[in-house]
Length: 143
Image (cartoon, rainbow, N blue to C red; front, side):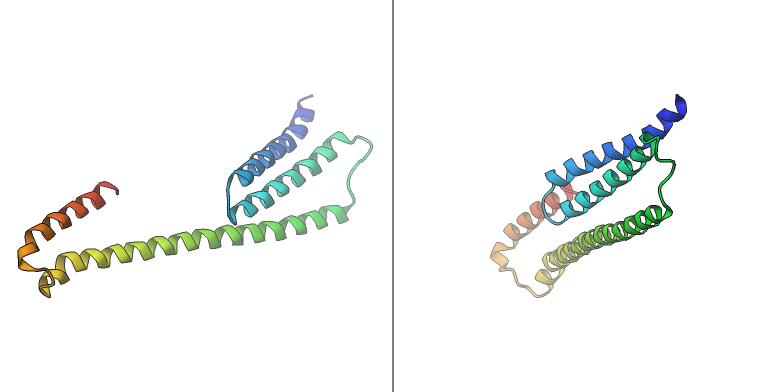
């Protein structure tokens, strides 16, 4: 009995993970939902493959061709999915670095260049310093 539960437990887990990834893919928008849908398909495929193997007593074993074909197909699909996710993560990190550099240039301008080049009217210097301090405090609070 325990070997049967063990043989059915993994495919059931894989199918449930496929369902969860499918739901997540439907909830997400944009190009990342394709990755979740492909992962969902792969989990379903693996789960159904092993569930069929565990529940079909008349089938002693699959032909080696099916094993090799499924391993090659799953490897190719996982490679495509990992490439997609890694490119998505790298694009996010590039955007974050660009925003950090832009904010750094902005604060350099506000604290250094504006005073050195005397770009602020002396009559409005006090107002400028108050606004600059407010903006700096708001930026620090949001970190």
